[in-house]
Length: 217
Image (cartoon, rainbow, N blue to C red; front, top):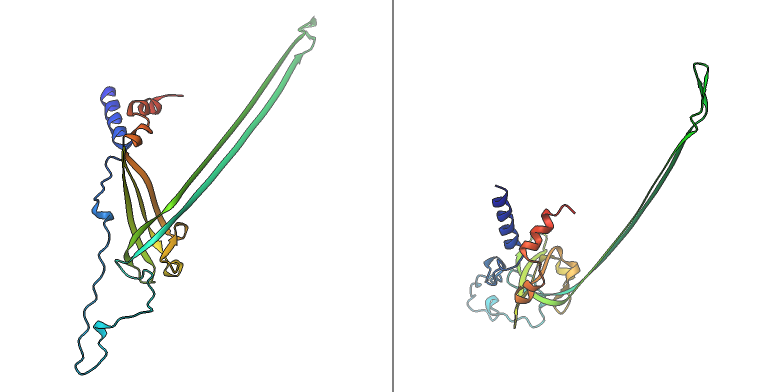
């Protein structure tokens, strides 16, 4: 029973440790098709036709489903933590000379104890992600905000790397060049990972991970 449980746990870890299950042609991350407006009815006898009008000074920033917007990745996080604990305790007991039933007893005994503890911990982490990715608008919310989503795949010699970005942006945060900084995405989901021999080499094996889980230390 124990052997089968450990084997099942090992297989589960082997499946979760890599990104091999990530598909490049995932329909959930496919770009949204633009919404085609219904053609306006032609007006006989008029020079201006709404369906054939050409706007020369229109704002080219994303505003409807299917439009694209560039997300500039400027993510950087730094975290550090330090802690220390120190405690000490001393105690002593002495038993002097006494009498028992009229007879003097010389105990001349003393007890002492001393305890001490010192502990210190320190942790630091730094992450940085820069670049850009162009995503598409998948939904226009009732308040005008845009829900965007998109991915970028890079095929290299030793594998593949991909970036996935999803979130919600305000139209007012989109710049004149139709771009927005990643820290302005609400409910942002940013994933950067890879597949292939290089990505696998940077991960611990399933057996080593299993021993780390069951180790009592």
